[in-house]
Amino acid sequence: MKQDRTSRRPSRRSPYAAIYLLFSRRFGSFWIGSLLSNLGTWMQQIAEPWLIVTLGGSAIMLGLDGFAMNAPVWVLTLLGGVLADTRDRKKVIATFQSIQMLCPALLIVLILTGTVRIWMIIALSLIVGITDALSMPAFQSIVPSIVESGQIGTAIALNSTQFNLSRVLGPAIAGVVMVRYGSVWCFGANTLSYVPLIVTVYLIGPVRKVSASLEMKTGAPWIKQILAIGSQPKLRNALLNVLVTGLFCAPLINFSPILVRNVFHSDALDFGKAVAAFGVGGLIGAVSVLAIEGMVARFKISSVAAIAFGALLVALAANRSLPVVNLLFVLCGAVMTIGNTSANSILQYTARDRVRGRTASLYMLAVRGGLSLGNLITGLSAAYLGIRAALLINGLLAILLQSLIARTSTTEDHVEPASRSVEPVQESTEREPWIRKGQR
Image 1 (tube, rainbow, N blue to C red):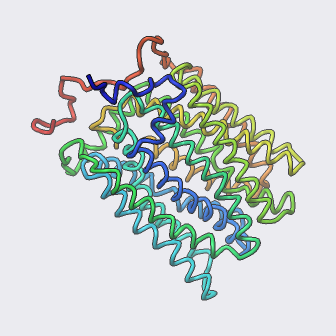
Image 2 (image 1 turned 30 degrees about the horizontal axis):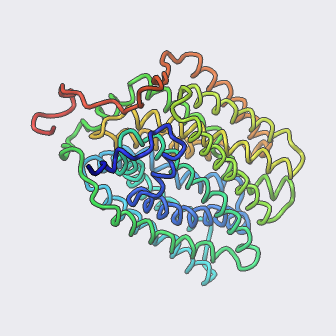
Image 3 (image 1 turned 120 degrees about the horizontal axis):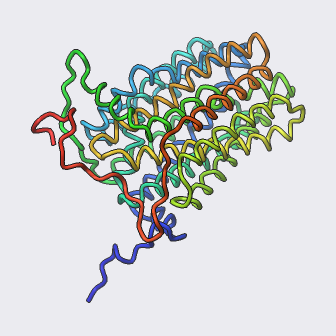
């Protein structure tokens, strides 16, 4: 008798589970498309702040640029979560990513014609932020919809691996390209990088709608649904972890050109190396999450990593050596990835499929919303106190707040016995109060 193919799949705890998933048609193609897209994104992430600095921009201008790119999540990402749950996710991603692709293309024209101004860069960042806010919940929730329920944790860790691999390669390539050819080539690479992701989303097959359309009446009942999701203690504490990290620690990358150029008087190549070092750490962190998946309490991992990130910022503020900066950036990348990936796994495992997009929107609100305010606050403090003092204050605040979150947490992410696989929370047979009759 022919053996069923699914029975030959390695268990989730098998060392081959990640390899099997990576070479599967749907997830594997999505992983490659995302990697190519993120390579272009990170090349622009290096070129854009350096372009602002070379145009005479200050720390405040860098902060405004980061704020413009991330602030729209406060207004639009919850709506993006509703779109992810009530519309075809692949169409949501393709539509907004296509609009976003026009922004680096326009920036190329402005650079080549010599008409580029800092306010134009910030305006284009705002458009990118708007399209990101509306499409990222669909992007985040598409991963659990193309893998089996027991593979969700491995898929999220693998997705984090490709993101951090791009963060290693993108800045390294960008540093060389900027020194030899100029920043315009980085924006060109980013423009082209949108194509593989858009095409791949369509190739992986139809992504079903997971609930009926929600009414968007005055009073916004969908906001009540999202608040009900976020009120669960396990989800709330995970969201608080990534929110504090976004507020005080994640702005480090956006202000690294100030640190490299103004403090260590170095060039774009060393700036690229520093950000690539952050990516190396992120890659190490993602692999570490894969190695310990299902073995250690996720919330404990997230809390320890978040506190460690704050301590590393304090060390960066005290450091006086450029080579040590790269080492500290490796460690920062590792702990940020471990903390955020663990928190995201908690959310994706706990969320029911029909509200997965809205759960992902809460995660994006915490990560990107916190980062938007963090960029603004860090920009102001760096402008008036200096970048070292800003990093020191941010690090101490992060340690204090993350310690309070860990101390007051009343939930524990228990590990399942070895004989059982960790599965996401199953659908309840009872109607949740926010699901109208006929919408199940």
